Image 1 (cartoon, rainbow, N blue to C red):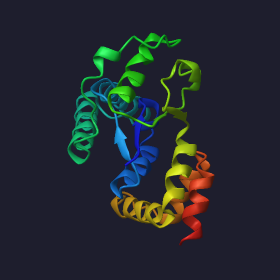
Image 2 (spheres, helix red, strand yellow):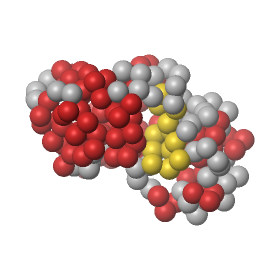
Image 3 (tube, rainbow, N blue to C red):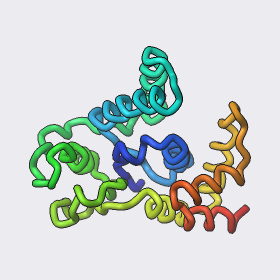
Length: 191
């Protein structure tokens, strides 16, 4: 199965994260991340809950920890181990991003899904690993089996209960907020 490393910036937006992980649930790909990525996600999730939603710090910390624990539980083979020996060996423009490529190499990923292209120049990335935007990754993944893409979105929609969100609303968010036009078009074709 194709494995893709999901960078923190891709996991941080909640609806995008939910969609990409829902595609993994229906076995369209295998998600990968490292402990460093999950630590970054937890930190940024706490700040988002406090700053955007006014959640008290202790509650934000508990919710962020719960998110990471759920990810570890539901994707128990996603966390890449043994990435640290590769950390710092790629000469990336931002040394703080080395751990992402290190985890991709250790996890045998075919792609790194990120919004951060400037810090992942292709000439510094080992052969066999593509750098993809989440919209391109979603389109490529849904194209493999659009009916499974639809199943992923339907299942995601059913989980959204407070407040409830319709299938059309989820698809509109994926299109309008995250630029996932191609993936949404493929899903619409099989509805």
